[in-house]
Length: 364
Image 1: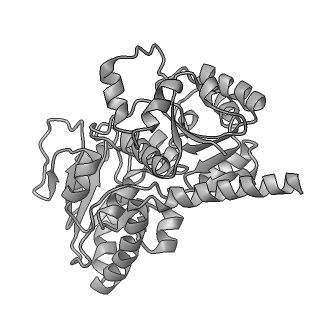
Image 2: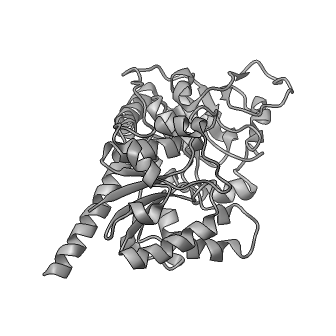
């Protein structure tokens, strides 16, 4: 079976995690013999600079030849091929591209799969967005969801449960290896887009806890506490080694008491990529108890769940060094899996096995 992975322009030098997640997915598939299939962005103009940018993602060298043919997807994909996408498709005319895929799927007997990065309809206050997104998602034969909650949402949308895999955590490719042991402290790291995580301006209200803040878009207001420190921003590759603290915080919105508004609603269904960042850095995580990732964190004993950040002083003071050591051993095992791409490879292997089983059933 001929295998392709679709790509659009990816910039890993920006200081946010969205590009890192897509670049890692592409790298994992490239290592696993998928051929790059480039879908030109809307209003695309091919230049030498763009080509040099794309070359970084195309190894070995012979795959570069396929790039040119990939500007004409219908001609570069043979019948019965397996094509993997990253959803949502970025920087393209999404409706037109997906309509083309639906047409090509039937004509060429293609199998289409996608790993979901975001469900935009759940973040956009548009009453018709969910219906449109459902149509788009049904373009694919297989979907890789973030977690069990997202899988249930997809099932409710009309997608067969047996065609949905669960990632649980995004892989985070890195060569960094955390130290095998660490002393528990009451220092917490938070990394994120500070425009939408404005709760960080209130962290001085939490007594007995120190915070190290990382990320773009910090306002110019100085922190009203010696316990809250802004540590700057870095690329996803660099920040793994720069995080300082004993825990990594996954939180969003403007409140210390809960994850409120649209950000809170979205946390109830998605798995933030920063969760993986903290884990590969060797940090147990602190997550909102109502978030979709909370059950996995508890099951694997790789962090703690809280209703309110104001509960942290009491919770951390009752956590012993022995408790922390146990938690961190689990984190280091999870970190090894994420750094090697195990989560995505496991789900892709399941999909490929399902395809082979279906083919065998037809032949028999």
